[in-house]
Length: 142
Image (tube, rainbow, N blue to C red; front, side, top):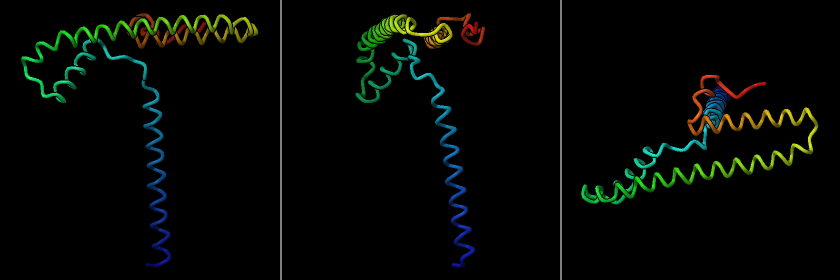
C-alpha cells in the first residue's frame, strides 16, 4: 500500500465521518423541534394500547370485545389526568412568574410577560385548542 493510497483512505474516512456528523446533527435538530409534550388524541392512545395488548397477549376477538370498553375508559381517564396536570403546571408557572416579576426591572418584566405569552401559545398549540393562534402563526408579539 502506497503512502498516497493511505492518505487517500484516511481522507475518505474523514469525509464520511464529517458527513455522518452533519447528518446526525441535522436529524437531532429536527427531532428536538418536535413537541415532545404533545399527547396523542384519546382515540390514538386507545389504539396504541389496544394494538400493544393484542400483539403481546395474542388476544381473541371475544377477549378484545370485552377489553375494548376498559381500554376506552383508560384512554379517557389518561387524557383527563393529562389535562389536570397541564392546568396544575400552569398554576405553578403563574405563581412563580408573579414572584419573579416583583424582582425584575420594567424591561425584564416585559420580557417575562412575553415569555409567558409564548409558553401559553405553545400549550394551546400542543393541546389543539387555539384555532386563532394557529391562524396568526404565533404568540402576540406586542
